[in-house]
Length: 67
Picture 1 (cartoon, rainbow, N blue to C red):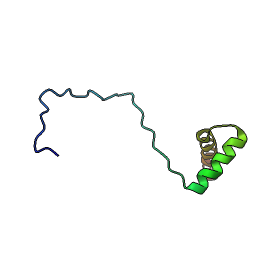
Picture 2: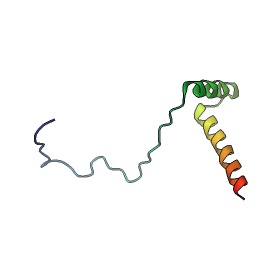
Picture 3: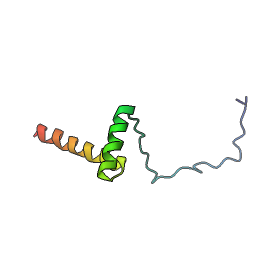
Picture 4: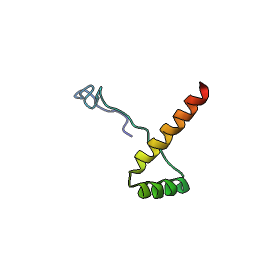
């Protein structure tokens, strides 16, 4: 690392985007990933869509149990 950096010509906010969305990466254990990949292939859908489907179903179950 340098002792000193020159920011005199830097542009504030050059890469800032107010409308940018951050998506958290999700890391699955290998056995879970293999199972979901196989299931998604059987259903001919993307793994991402399958995981969202399964999580929405769990959310609905949790919300139903609270009522």
